[in-house]
Length: 121
Image (tube, rainbow, N blue to C red; front, side, top):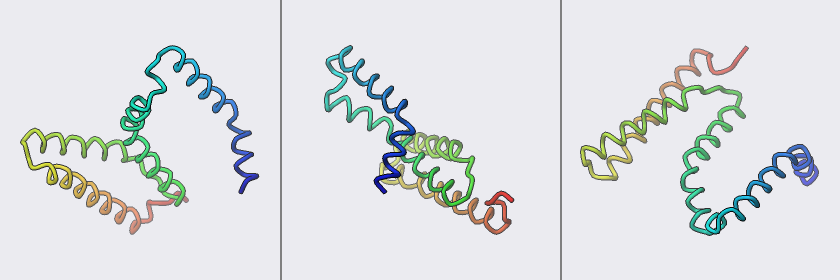
């Protein structure tokens, strides 16, 4: 396990060095960059991308392919925005888009599984 981690670090050393260099430059450029507030703000704004990336890794690792993740995110955002605009009680405005996406994703996954379209030949 340790050897695999060391090989990964060795393989991506240029990317890691660039990331460290960028952080050093920005921390000197702004006194607010390395504050806890800014770090939490960056993590908060990247949470959706992180969750979608983990989901895509899971789909690809299991041998499937899913190109609908962007449209699913857009659909969920539109439904949630419309519900909030109509001033629907917030738990319902949160749960309805989630349940509709879960249902449509289950339907699409089930249909691709039964038709054999989920794996490339």
